[in-house]
Image (cartoon, rainbow, N blue to C red; front, side, top):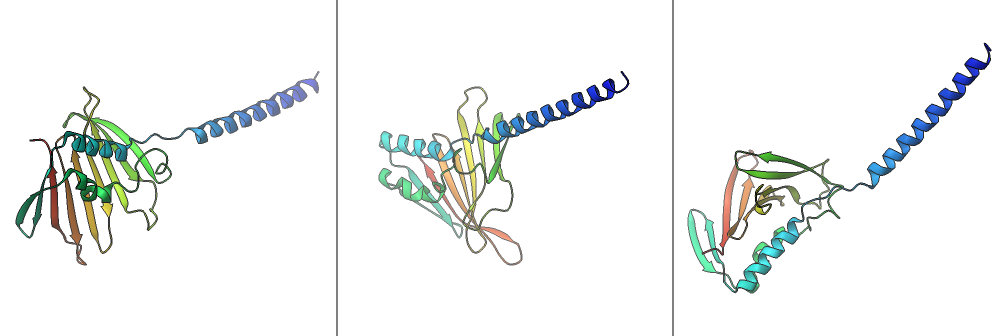
Length: 193
């Protein structure tokens, strides 16, 4: 009897350890197959451009540079070229989940559900996109605003602020060797009159 009890406990112990190991492997396998879903920002922007083109209303473009603002009507067929830099890379769940993480929270100060996307680790040199945010109205569940940041060559940053169904603005910022930043140029498209 004295020998049977320790043998039984050893068998029980090894069986339990083996089951725990299988359970852990199964959990890892499940975790590896779950893919994080990103808001499809590029599809959203293309949808907004499509709606502009469908409406037939030419947006008004304001360009501010060196404290001087000019305005010009943009033909609807030329809208893509104004926004082109922010249509690549395509932001969706299939191509950036390995590079970026998503965090979400309800920001009561601006009454929006905010989705923030940050790099998981240092990004490859070919990846200019650095950060983006999506703001959704908690009541209507519609996108209120999108904000993207791209780092270009020579210390230049491009920022896109997109306000749904109203306007978008591209801001070009240059940082000099001393770390001082200045806005070089702002281009704003307005289509809600």
